[in-house]
Length: 282
Image (cartoon, rainbow, N blue to C red; front, side, top):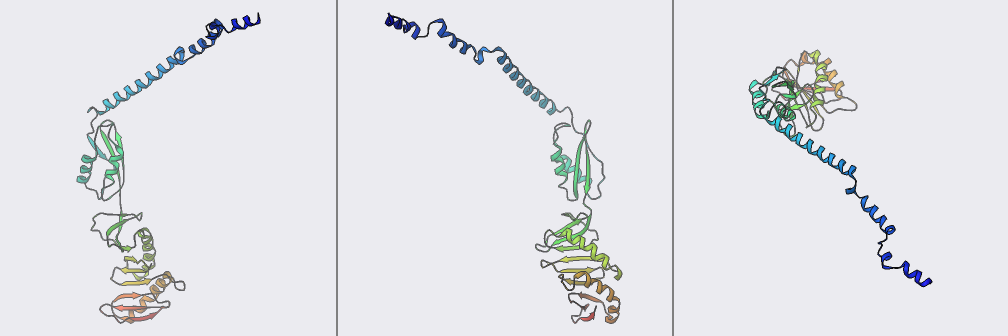
């Protein structure tokens, strides 16, 4: 009898899992899949419809904005330029402005205006319904600039920035290594105040690669300061020369071409057309 009971338990029906108890777990597992969850399927469907609606809406908006319904008709210049011409502005407007009121690329338009020679900064905004507003900040040139390494001629503005433009204005001339324009501009103001007692203006200032200074006055005289010295700084040497100059000029009696201030306690004067220097003590 125990053997028969064991055979019944291992019948083919039970081994294949066809009884009600053995098949229930499998059916429950199958019905718990994604495709048997209506709430999840509805959520997926809503998400797909949302994405499709956004894509269609974006395409419709892009198509609508690209239509010639909002043309740009004018550029309003809010800051009348002093150096930039109307012809230059018109040329940039025609070449850089593309599209309508909504599709025009303001950043590209701004960058194109800033490429004009005298333009330091530009600002472009939309003005409803068919215009662009333009504000320009121009360079205010204060000196001519020559790079001593290459000899390139440029201009220096009030901020010490270098830019390229044509100018016939009377301005001082700066010369020095690349990247020293702002430093030379500050020194020009400093040296200019120091020579005011001479009644002359500083029209030229040069800095060599060895950091030696040379000044040029409006009467043509050149002052050679040379390099800064620990015992005799260039500022002290220039102040001494300014104090001693009236008396030294009377003694020389001729027009001076070069005043060499590289001596610690004196200076040498070279007359116009002559090489022999008349020395004076500071």
